[in-house]
Amino acid sequence: MPVLTTETVPGHEIAEALGLVRGSSVRAKHIGADIVAGLRNLVGGEVREYASLLAGAREQALDRMVAEARALGADAVVAVRMETSMIQQGASEILCYGTAVRLA
Picture 1: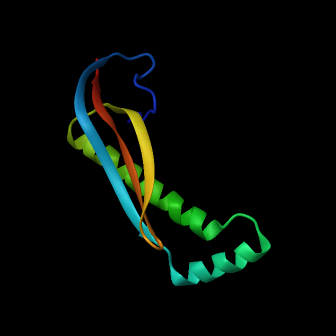
Picture 2: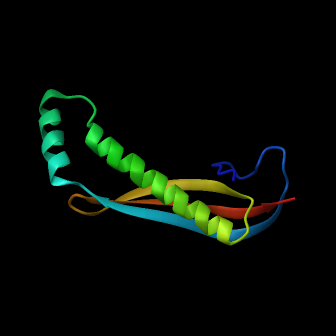
Picture 3: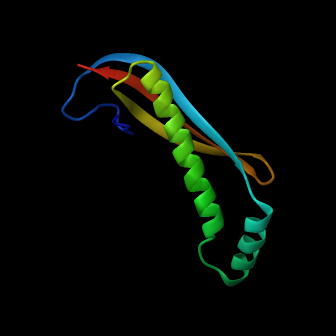
């Protein structure tokens, strides 16, 4: 299923907009990863533990949005956006949303 940040699907016409679809994931830091990340912060560089945590959260949110679109019978999701917010110290939410559409 095409998932695009654009409002159209190149080479296709949108026949019907089915509505808003979304998916989210909330992840919290792990104490072990937090310790390693703290040490890495002393020497600099990418904090891979957090990068991996956020990458997994993004994929899960995206997968949940696509599942919601499929349940509506969509052929694609357009105008996709992602946002993040801190829920509490050490826990963040990734939200993915867009418009489910049927193609002509």
